[in-house]
Length: 242
Image 1 (cartoon, one colour):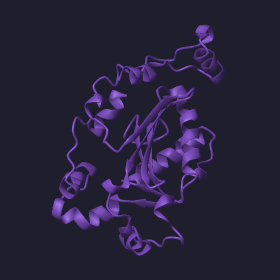
Image 2 (cartoon, helix red, strand yellow):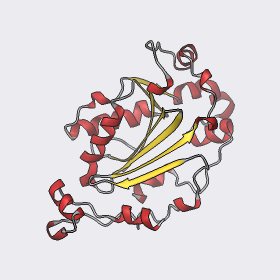
Image 3 (cartoon, one colour):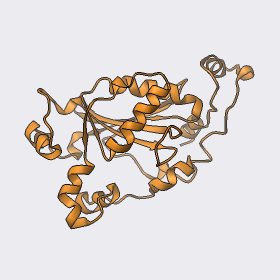
């Protein structure tokens, strides 16, 4: 825990040269842009949630943004035999290219500085999930300060370019458009974001809306998957906490 806090505590430096000077132990020319996120995220006690026994965890503070990765055994997920082309087309109501393997899908979620979108809203945390070498890999990219946005987006763009289809929950109307706009504002090609997009929200509404009434992600997790979040920060409070 102490190591993780020290990584998050590192201040943001205005440009790459100053970052390198800071990392080399010569911070004289470094300009600290804001306090660390440690105090702002103090309410989130991640240490109380132990990783699954089969999880492989790694994390690091790069010279540009904070990055963490975990991988999980596929045994914890529904059998992949259900992820057939026909089943996916029936669920999402559009044709899929051939071939399309589960390994070519990338799951995307973001945490943002606001919930209304627009040019002033930034994604400060981007999470990507995909299947690799028989495991489900989760990668998280954290922008600890606004000066780190170009570097975080560059890393995310590089990771996204490997996949053919995007999978989100309500990402068609929020996460994907926001990410594309931030990429363009930072002069990074938005072509890395897969054009093929499966948004789980819409088929969820078709199947469970009449039965459940509410089809928020939290409600679906509880009613359909039997998952109850513990020590979770409500999404509406995330921008203020950041």
